[in-house]
Image 1 (cartoon, helix red, strand yellow):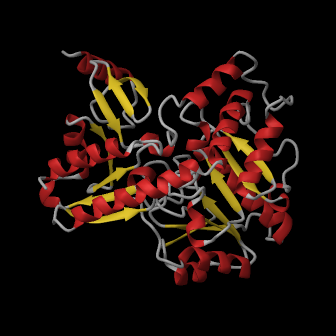
Image 2 (cartoon, helix red, strand yellow):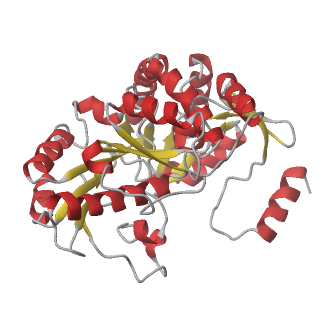
Length: 401
């Protein structure tokens, strides 16, 4: 057996089978490239589902982490620490908001947003106790906790995990009429991904997000934008909502906020919304820890320059032009996305998304499939154009173009 085969067999023997990863074992990484245990290099066109927006081992982020590791890594929220105030104030400023509630993972942040919306509904809107409703979209992906999968339409995510948490109304993504019909006087929030990542990088119809924003204001309902994958530069703007001039009531952030080094997430909103909490009503031992804050502060500083957003917009335009040309060959049936983020639907005659991903892996390119026929492409935002073109060339070769 090769080193790769040995390590995969050992992992399979002692790991719950919740994932079906590609058969590659990464040993090191730098920038947009990863190296496996046998020394073979791979171009990373997935970037940890946007957690690695700034590349593997970004020097600024690594140095920020190292410096903090030498000082203090955890205090819990029982005490203040000297990086916390700056993290909260600078993240709030980046978002154009007032308050920050820090957590760790994206799913924790979504759970926090759900709790925030319900509490706001009872304390501020005056919804009767236990009656709060949240409208969500079909084909969503917000995480895998019990509450979150309760409003998933993905059978794999839901099956055998009931009983499910009530209080959610599911409507088709992009259907404003259905959303309007689902709202009642007890609706406290609309929770949406501005672009649905796991569903295949689905971009909503033009005008949909502004219409949702108008509807939520009209009905006194919070607009909660899950920008965990789409935010922080991925689509060519700081937040995907910006493409349609929309500012939600609540941002849910994660993934890239931790720079690919530590899990960092947050709910960011106004004082009216997040101010409903009182001590003891919500929290996290590790949320907002010194190490997380140090890394996230450097992420915020890098985003503040606009450099990564501009790069995503420029290279993203090139990416979509190249992928769009594939759609005219019959090998690809559709291409969707914004910035350096694309969902590519493979024509059935040329393989499943998994099969194409495996063939690309053999050629030194790493992507991941979703929903059978779709391949997701989301390289680190710092990727070089030559590297990106090389990766796209491998895709063309796999499809026989």
